[in-house]
Structures are given as C-alpha cells and as structure tokens.
Length: 276
Image (cartoon, helix red, strand yellow):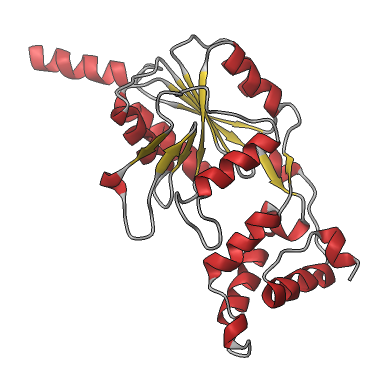
C-alpha cells in the first residue's frame, strides 16, 4: 500500500506545473513581455539571438533564404573550377560574411523589454547555437557576438559579472566547444538544453523559474526537457514572428555578392552589390 501511495504521489507531482515545463507558441513578444514582468529576482530569462532578437539586413542572409545561402556557400568552397588560391574553406567564407553583415531587429520592442529585466534585477542571458573561440577569420566568436549585440542595445553581462568567461571542458568535442562569455552562452553543436543545464550546475544555481525564447522548436523542446529534468519550472516560448517578415532576394544581387566574396574575400551589402 505504501508503495502504491508513493507511485501515486510521484505521478501527481509530474502532472503539476512544477513537474512539467510548458511550451507556448507565440507570434509576437506581448505574451513573453507580460510573463517576464511578473518574475521574481531569483528567476532566469534566456533568449536566443539569431532570428529571435535580430536578422541580417541583406536578403540572401535572412532565415527564409537560409537553404539557398548555404547551398551557394558550399558551391563556392567545393567548386573544382575555382583556382586553388581562391577556394576558401566553408568556415572562412562564412566568417567573412559575418564580419561585414549588418543586422536589424525582429521586434523593435526587444531591447526595451530586456533592459527592463536589468533594471528590475532579473538575470537574463543569451543562449546561441554558435561555436566559441576562433571561427575562420574571426579570432573569437563570443567577442564578435557580444559586440554585435551591443550595437543593437543588448547587454547581458550584468547578470553574472563575477563569471566573465566559463568553459565546459566536459562537453568539448573536436568541432564543438561550448563557452560562456559576458552573459552569452554558446552551445556550439550541443543541444541548448544540455548546455544550459551544464551552466546552471557549474555555477551551482537553481533558479526559481526559467523563461526561454527561441524561434526553433527543437531548441525550445531541448530547454524545456532539460529544465524539467532539473526540477526547475520552465516556460519555453516558440517565437515565430520572424516567419511573418517578408523576405525576397534578387538572384543578380546574390550572384554579385557571391562572386565578390570569392574573388576579394569581402561581403557586399545588397545596396553595394546592386550598384555594381
């Protein structure tokens, strides 16, 4: 009888909000904003970066054209007709694009929403699926990302000033090295939930609640599952506003951008490419 009661209590606990996370699909930031405004000082807000906070201004680099962009980047790096001195590896080509690209906000309210968290004493971090350390021509991806975020008014370094950088040697693989830098958690090739869990365990902190925002459902599910496994109440928002943004690209402009990138190792904006 005692065993039956224990099993019943276990199932009951799993069926409560404190046993399971919650995944919510949203097309704008209003539900997320209303939620984080009610958090206590021991909560943690975690947000994705690309296609959640901002997207590139150039059409071919935008999420709607991701497959097309990757296709011609690979063609450039693998084309046997390209002279060897002009054939760059994929990482190098990608890094030259990242160095020059300009970005714009997905939602103009996002900087103010996250700034309110800072002012209210609520900790927040960025959780991005980029690699830490060197990438192609970029010496430090985490420094590059910090600078790009700062230009748009985002600064997560206030949350854990006592931990300016943190490596996760136990998760390191040949091509995947997660890293924490000034409030930016780079998950590399690992599931975001796994890296966020490792971060919380390494700093020995059990937040009262985690609120997560990401445009990719698999990332939302990953964080939701990891926080639930830790017994941390979590609301994971699948944020789909970027899908509502119009995005078309001009083949002539994209081809001019690709040719200049291959010939000169420099990315041209849509405007620069259209004027050539």
